[in-house]
Structures are given as C-alpha cells and as structure tokens.
Length: 137
Image (tube, rainbow, N blue to C red; front, side):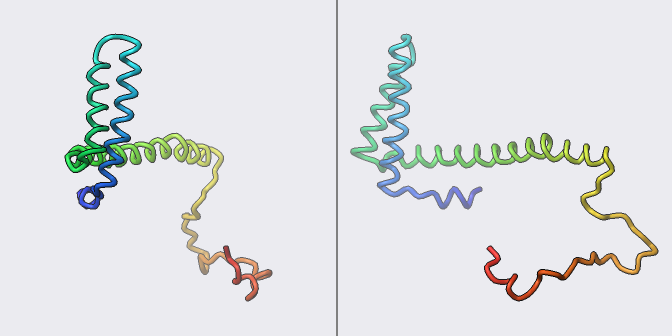
C-alpha cells in the first residue's frame, strides 16, 4: 500500500481536477444543507468555493490534501475489497459447501483408494484433434 501511495500522480492537471471535483461536491452539499436548514451548510459552501478557487488559480496548494484523500481512498479500497470477499465466502461458498456435504457431493476426489492402480482420470479422446487447438478463445 505504501508503494501505491508513492505512485499517486500529482500533476497540475490532476490537482486542478481534484480541486474542482471535491470543491464542487462540497459546494453542492453545502448549498443543499444551507437551503434546508441553518447550520454547517455555510461552512461547507465556503470550503467548496475555496477548493474550486484553489483548483483554478493555485492547484499546487492542494497537493497535501489530494495525497491525504488518495491515502484514505486506498485504505477504504483495501478494507472494502477484503470485506466483500469475506461476505461472498461466508454467504455464498459456505452454504454451497454445507448443502454439498448434506447430499454427499464431493467436488474434489480426495478419497484414498489403496486398490486403485492409478488416480489418473481417463477422458474420451474423441473430438480432440489439431483443429480443436486453433481459436481457443
């Protein structure tokens, strides 16, 4: 993850895009809140305008904010991808394995047969010629 942080691009164009996008979202959120109720909407609107102005006039100032934002994004991505994989494992693969065990299905042939001369699974050779090796995709 540290290597990914070092590879984050912070060119003038990317910093300008960061300022405009994040500033636009914060400005829109601030305006929405400001018109619905009084409170922190004015602060968010001011921050959004400041980010847009910095993005247009002096994008280099936004570099530390962009680095911090991207570090947070990388951290969230790492956590969420693992969380999604855990959820898929427990809610998809575990029930499938449980049902297979109930019905006696074995996806891997792991039983040891001491009388078997070989564990090789013979497949029919029909339909496997040189023409089958072309255009495999």
